[in-house]
Image (tube, rainbow, N blue to C red):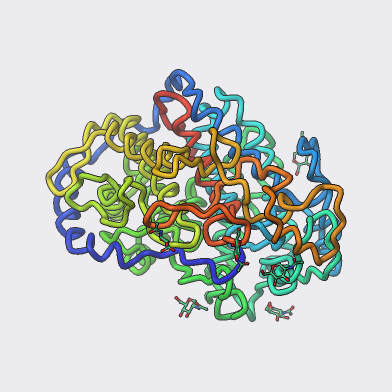
Length: 525
Ligand SMILES: *[C@@H]1O[C@H](CO)[C@@H](O)[C@H](O)[C@H]1NC(C)=O
Ligand SMILES: *[C@@H]1O[C@H](CO)[C@@H](O)[C@H](O)[C@H]1NC(C)=O
Ligand SMILES: *[C@@H]1O[C@H](CO)[C@@H](O)[C@H](O)[C@H]1NC(C)=O
Ligand SMILES: *[C@@H]1O[C@H](CO)[C@@H](O)[C@H](O)[C@H]1NC(C)=O
Ligand SMILES: *[C@@H]1O[C@H](CO)[C@@H](O)[C@H](O)[C@H]1NC(C)=O
Ligand SMILES: *[C@@H]1O[C@H](CO)[C@@H](O)[C@H](O)[C@H]1NC(C)=O
């Protein structure tokens, strides 16, 4: 990201909803109670339905952006304009930090959003792996996930040390060059017990726990290794509590964190799924639930705030039941489920608690920078919730007395996906390579410079060039439109035209849930 980019929170827009939240909570308690002891212990896998070509094509493209962003020695690379880069990353500490992915149009590896990318990609594979497989997209998703988790493992060389950044954004941003020809210094940044970084350590723990589930049946040795790092990182995050934005104030200019309590719950929720260890369930349900979960208050899911994600993930346990949970734990899980419902009710356009933060065309719209991150992430959550309802045979969701079916939730998710793919006033697809019209001036160093140019650091003439990018940043999800639904396709417009890896993770999640006409989530814990 190019500047102070990271406005992730649109809390103000939710204030409108807050007044209603208490009512939603009361109404929801009633519906939830009436169906408390669920008989279905796990979702019943069913046929994934027919392939929706449109979403299959879009998913295929979206996954390719991870290949565009890969650092290190490439394996099976199909992009003519990409090759090996950053092979020495980490070498000053005898670490191999060459893999992982560049964050956006620049070449920094930022740990917090990168780990979030891996967690969301794992979640997508866990829920919708069968659909991805049916659309012949599972293998690239697994390869890209492992490309990140291999890096994250190496970034955690001892219990209480985690490297959270490779490259200095100030140095990196003074250059406009291809990753293959980078020559500037790429310093490492770590968190440790004297300079803790709870959010980044906990998000990394969430990534590795969720990935350990993904790789469980593929390679149990690798899965165990992921889980071992995850558990150590969670202890490090929880014992040495402190925000990395305070320990290392420089990070505030890029991925400033607004707090770490959401990441602690999110990581513990993933660790409970990965291990079945009761202590992680108690962590989210008992003391920390009360202190951190913000029950009843909807929030926006993003690289900075995982609460809505944790609420939906924990709803899974509520929907599909668990023999192992105590009464107190069930009550807490129910509160998570009720809060997840409040999130979904806020998204449905004709719900009494609908957020007013949308464009005239119906796109959820929260922030000017990278505006598509919120609608796409929200649609992914709504789709998951819809599929949890379907898979648990929960017929309706009540929003302040109005009743909605899983099909209504899916319709919302589709509306956001279709907007992104071109059903918008600009008639522009914001997924690069999809449809007849998509951004040609994506703010991306590698895509903007011909593959045979060796610019050194000073390739700014390619930033200024009025010709379209010589290389297509295939599958990139750009930042997206303004509130008035316009988009300026100009390479210097990083606010709207810069893609990110975490945008790719959420669009991959959304599209993999839409790739077949009906989707039933899978059992994974
Ligand atoms: C701990 O991390 C801080 C912040 O990155 C760093 O300044 C310090 O040198 C690290 N401590 C050790 C012992 O490396
Ligand atoms: C399984 O994972 C381990 C640990 O990463 C690795 O050494 C081994 O080669 C993997 N096995 C296969 C069959 O890929
Ligand atoms: C980073 O976030 C904290 C907590 O929300 C806030 O106090 C601080 O001003 C932010 N820093 C910047 C540079 O925006
Ligand atoms: C690129 O454009 C900027 C801003 O218009 C200008 O300051 C700079 O000199 C230009 N650089 C090159 C190499 O054309
Ligand atoms: C749309 O909004 C942007 C950002 O606020 C503004 O710069 C632009 O002028 C607006 N365009 C129109 C056509 O109103
Ligand atoms: C950004 O690019 C557009 C053309 O695409 C140009 O009109 C504008 O002056 C540029 N802005 C800066 C700050 O370079």
